[in-house]
View 1 (cartoon, rainbow, N blue to C red):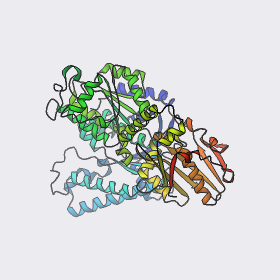
View 2 (cartoon, one colour):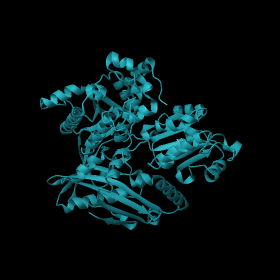
View 3 (cartoon, one colour):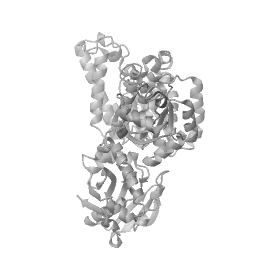
View 4 (cartoon, one colour):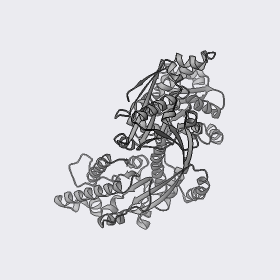
Length: 597
């Protein structure tokens, strides 16, 4: 559960911020619009949690009430800076004292009018922000009352519970109508940690700071996870120990019939933990096992225990042996072709956690005390970085795709004496190239957010960004799908093309790591050039922006007939005269292509 935080902890974090900034590789500007005093605790924690992912955030606080005054006075410029994210955190009681504190004193007609006025103001406020800025809006919903007084199904319409619920539904609806506008519902945090932990009533009366230090910590950790997901820093894989985590006891010593695992006490702790793990699995998170054990004992448990929920087919990888866990986690990352910083590791042994933290600092290693199995589920749910903004077909089938990839690798090992071309022919690959559609917009956005290796510009996009480009007559958003004899990999690449008078620019060129080494990138580039030629344009510009993980793509354009022409800010531009372009289409010998553009 949430950690109690004292002033020494906060001071330690504050002192570390400057050193942490030196390692930052992303810089963002965040505006916080609020009607309460959140400084300095809120911004210290928010900076701290973002810097853990090497994101340096400059945070500006704007007064909510002052913002309204400026809106009504029709000031021409409400924002004096360009922001990447705008957090809106209105506090119930300072927002409308009558409505949230003493609604029972209002007559029905006045109450209805008051609620309608609040909705009009919220609508105006949101629309003004959207008109003034392209930043991603994260709106913190009104917090539900700690003591609702009436039953939630009561027909007393002036109860604070009903008023806040109605306004929150209204805010959610208004956000869905606007691009890049999202809800942050922190009521789940207050439910999980409790109001005594989250609030500090003394500080509220002293300084209008509503939250305790621990409350600020959890709130900012939750908000930081949203931002990290947009930037492509979400976690992808949950690596789990087995004994005293997935079941109670040591299976190698006690046998599968004597460990604790069932829907009933004491096995229920582990049973509900496995249920929650599978919820993450069904949302596209990869599940792997890393256990010091005899592999046959664990496999026997997976296959034969009547209450074992996690099965072999749920696992993207497993390393069950007596090697050190840091080495095994490294093997898992290599096998899945993911970076270590996309892994969360959970173990009941503090020594193992300490070793992983020391040897693999990129991995988030979490100690799950074996004497407190009742907290396992909650500790898992507190890992907000395992969340997704949306669920795609590729998410649902992700583990299956990794299992198919393992079959490909095993097949490649058996055919190690074959040439690369002969092996690629044996895969019986088929690709389909088309324009992005409503069916795969979520996947396209996800590729921009999560792909780091073969991503030439690392520009992160939301679904709304992609939709806007799809509807822009000056852009093409192209997707490429792949399947072979082992399975369907779905949408594995995308490219955004912007058209000028006689020149096209490749603003995005992305390929999933699962499709590397097959010449798929050459196919996509060839069809882009064919598309640009069909529009009568004479030249094309490819853009490249270096990042910590995409250096392998730095020569991509030069290897495919482009010439480096200049450097523009963080971007290197490569140029190709289409009349001189000669694509060497060896890939046609081993890939069947279908173009819908």
